[in-house]
Amino acid sequence: MEGEIIPSEAAILARSERDPYQAAMLTWLEGKAAHTRRSYLTALRAFLVATEKHPAEIEPRDVASWKEHLKRRGLADATVAQRLSAISSYYTYLTQQGIHDRNPVAAVGRDDLDVNPYERAHKLPLVAFRRILKMIPDDTEIGARDRALLLFYVLCARRRSEVVSLRAHDLRVEGEKVTYRTRLKGGKSRWKELPPPVWEAIRRYLDLAGREPTGDDPIFTATTDAGRYLRKYYGTPQPEGPEPLTGAAVAQALKRHAAAAGLDPDAVTLRSLRHLGAELYYEASGEEHRHWQAMVKALGVGV
Image (cartoon, rainbow, N blue to C red; front, side, top):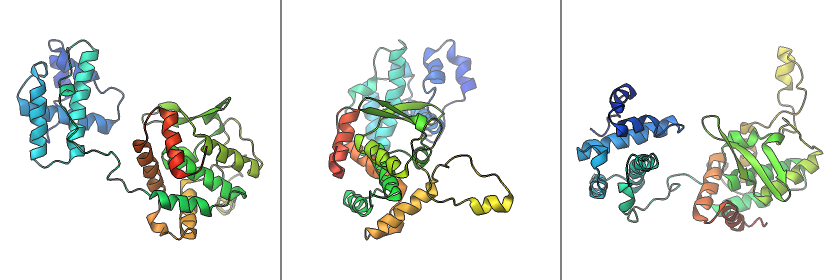
């Protein structure tokens, strides 16, 4: 049945010495998130059960037939595309390892699948975000900070925790190019280009705050000490330096700005900002810097 999972790794390992296709299943998804491994392995298992063939015997017509079977069952185009991607990922790995000579999924067209990875996500309308930006003063420390934060969320489409936890050592300035470190699931990290409008907004905020963070210093900090009462009550020491702004504080600030812009604050969330950024990124094209240039143009914030 399609809901079944792939045979246990122990069972695969028992056959792997005589079957390299089985052995490849042990290393194919190494390093990917747990939910990705589960969904990809489940899709591969369902495909092989449906075709009743060994992976070495699969032809493009088998993939095409399975694709049509999934569509007849009424599965959403995004679901069909995800399952085809799982099978394609497996065969791509096999070809890279010299186990198989070609990827049978590559010969099967997918233009009939109407897939937008963000179509189900609730996103803030672009016009609404522009209204919010216009309501945020950039001549005060708090206003400049909030503007920098919101631009970061949209133009970089990062998670709330990643942005508020940004430290000075997470930024690199090399001439006119600025990169920031983003932490991926699994503890890995990657350096990505920071769009100039975001960097300009951060620099303006730090100038107004009179701060020049270094090392482990947080970039975004609170202007009030909300924890002083708790420290006094529990007798805990005063922090040595500025504490990073909390995600809850950013969410509250966003709702205040949304209300000032005449929007329903309950309908505006940080996640909706991230989805707006993801949608803009998806609609853009070209290399990474071309992506954010198109996004900046759409926001109307200038470069």
